[in-house]
Image (cartoon, rainbow, N blue to C red; front, side, top):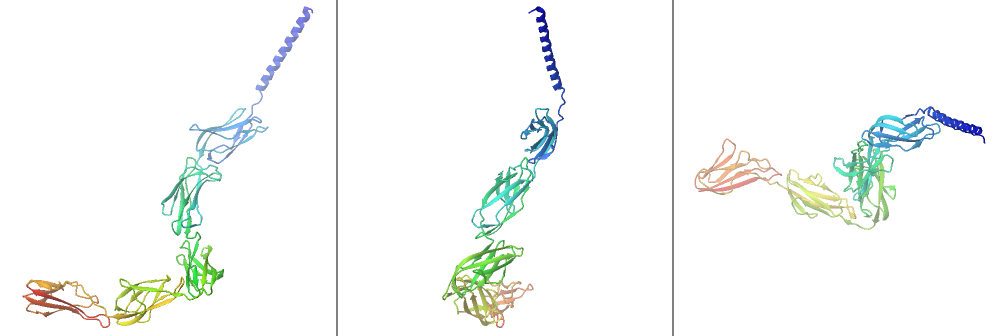
Length: 504
């Protein structure tokens, strides 16, 4: 090969390499000069913990992976799940703030230039607290009391912290810590409470709040505690006798409810509606045939409430034992049926009365004695009367009546006096028989005084202006003085008191 050909090929190689280098340089310049994406976003701003913000990003690199982060003023950083822009460079980011605070800057980062969104304020979520109880509970049986704290919709934040359950008087029943609830944005807690007795119980829960959730107080909730766990109970003997009346008692809770109760036997009515009085409706029923039956009680309230209960009974035939009534005057011993007893006129006697059946007793008077209830007040005159104590029977006992004969005697007058008891008295001493405030008996009769022995010589009565009655011992010897008051015809016997003093 000639030297000229070699130089020509060498020159052509330099040109080719130079052209390639120039093309590469021009390509690089072309990429750098390409127009930049105009990235932006909307939907971000002030918010509430747990409530999602929908952020729409535009002008992002096509198919780019996007990462949203928010920087709080306390240095905490929170983020949203990663998303990808579509082929047009658009994307939707869902971000729910999880903590309260001031965001200083939020950023949407990508393989392109990031989008800076600025600051925002995130507030607490409001809450609603409820306490949930069953309407009815059985005495002595544990019942679940549940408290739920719900972030107000649409917040998904689950509140934390404590709730306190109190009764109607404000006394604390239980303090509990919240755990995440089964529902979205919930915290809950529960405990077991056992009603100690029948009645209406009130519960109210207070949530104290946490850093991200506000406090709230629940409405009051109520439980009616009853012996059988239902709002109505039926009390009756389980065994009855044909022809013997029985008292059926239905109790409806709460006892303040107004309404009525109807009684049934094997589902068929045996009574008209019986009004509730303090939650109780009583009905006296007499079985007419023997066998096994189901007693029922159905109630309705003036507010539209209703309910029922039932109980099994066995009715037997045959004679029943008569009820036995025990009558005992207060402070005395029991009276015997058909016995005769004396009461003083214008006196008052209270009786303690009981029956084997447990039935209440009424009192009738066949004479001039009056008898309001079980209180016997004799008239203002001597007389005779018959007191009849009556039991309606029940619980397997037949009705019974027991009579007592009462003779009303004259009332015995009494008086409170200053007169000393009989005894020795120094000569010259003056005794007070009656002070100014004394002088009448319990029947309102005035007492008069008379010296019956030693008059004028041994002693004398003195009547000072104060209204008192005095006795002065003048000489040695015996002085007898008598105080008396007249009786009241057919009511009070006469009154008399005697004192004998010996002057020494």
